Image 1: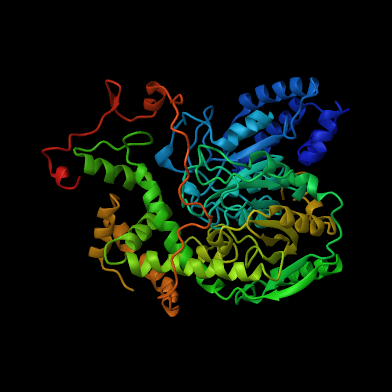
Image 2: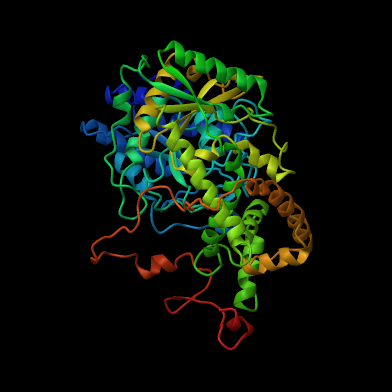
Length: 494
Length: 102
C-alpha cells in the first residue's frame, strides 16, 4: 500500500528507492503525485517553465517495467527537475531568456542523457535567471519564482526554480548550475541541500555556457545522501567536454554510512567570513553549527583566507568577460529569436538588443569593456592574477584542514523586489559562494536553522575532487540536527 | 571610474548590442558604479603574480582522430530563423558597409 500522495512528494530519493524496489510504490504513482502537486501549486510558485507531463508518465511506466525486471539503477523512477539551461531534445530549452523562446535542442546534455539511462523521471524544465545570471531568479524573462517558505520572498538564484521545486515538494531531486553560487545560495534560501562539484567533475556538454572557467552542474536534494546519489549518477569523464576530468567517481552515498563521528576531521573556520552586514540570525545559526561539529568530534581550526574580500570584484570581471564571449553565439542566425533588419550588423544588434534582458545586457557590457583594447590588462588580466591569490589562499588552508565551514549567504531570502534597483546589492548575495568557483573547489549548502522563520544555509567547502569528505561532514552535521526534516507548512508551502 | 555615453556606445558597438538612449544612460550609471566597486583590486600589488585562467591542471586534451556520426543537416537547421538550400541564410556582407567590419 503506497503512502498518501502528500507524503509521496515528501519522500527522499533514498526512501522512495526502497519503496519502489519493495513493490510498495510504483514510479507512476510517484510521478502522478508530483504532477498533481505541480498542477496545484506551481501556478503560484513558478518553479517550472515547462512541465514534461506526458514524457514523465511514459518514463515512469518504463521505470516500473525496469524495476519489475530487477534491474533498477539508483535513480530509476525518481522524479527530477532540470534547470532550463540544460539541453533536452524532447522539451524546450530557453535559459530563462526570450532570445531562446521556442528553441529545441538537437541533442541532450550529457547529464540529461545519464539521467535517462538511469531511468529517472524528468518532470520538467525549471525556472532560472536569464542565462543563469542573477541571485534571486527575478531576472527570468518569463516569471519570478516564489520561495516555498514565504511567498513574498525570493528563492535565491540563479537556480531558483530547481531549489524551490525541491524545497516545496514539486520534485524529489533537481539539477542546477553554479557559476558563483547559483546552486548553493538558492539551496540555502529554500532550506534544501545543494552541491557545486569540483570544476571538472561533471561534464558541461549541453549546459548553455555562462562563464566556462567557473560553471559546474550539480544536484539539489532534501538530504545529503540524496545529493550524493545524484552526484554519482552525473559525474565522470565525458569525451564531449574536454574539461571533464578522467578520475574515478566514488559511490558517494555509500561512503556516508556510519556518519556521526567526526573524530580526526579538521574543520576550518575562516575569520574573513565574518563580515559587516551579516544578519544576526544567520551568524547565530552558523555559530551553533560550528559548536555542533565540535560536539561530533571535529577539530575546529581557525584559518585565514585573506583575499576573500577581493573575490566578488574578481568574479564580476571574470564571469562577465567569459559571458560576453559565450553569448556572442546568440546572433539570430543559427537558432533563437531573430529580428529582421536590412543588414547583417543591424540584425545582430536588434536581435540581441531585443532578445536579452537588462542583467544579461549589463554583464555583456561589463565583460566586453573588461576585454576591450586599453582595459584588458587593467581589468581582465588583473582579475586573473587576483584569482591566483584566491586559489593560493585555499591551497594553504588545505595544509591545516580537511573542510572549511562558512555561511552560505550573509542573509536569509530577501523580499521580492528588494534588491532589483541596485545591481551591486544583488551581487553581494553571492559574497560567500563566489570564492569556491574562483578556486574550482567543491561546495555544499545544507540547512542549519532559521532566522525570522526563513531557512539559513551552512556551507562546507572541500579540497579539489574530495567531495567525499565534504559530503561526509555535511551528512554527519545534517543527521545530528532536525533541520532537514522540516518542511514549509503541513499542507503545502505557507 | 566614470564612463561617458560615448564609452557605453563604443562598448555596445563592440558587443553588437542594440541599446535605446535610455539604456545607454542607465548602463552608464550602473557600469560606472560597478567599476568603482571593482577598483578595490587596485589595492593589491599583483606585478609578480601569474594569472590563472582556469584551475585544473589540464593543458591540451588529445583524442584519436576518428570518424563519428554527426547530426543530420535537417536537425541542425531546424532552429534556424532563415534557411535556404540546406544552409543558414544571412544578409550579404561583401560589398556593403558590414564588409569593413568583418
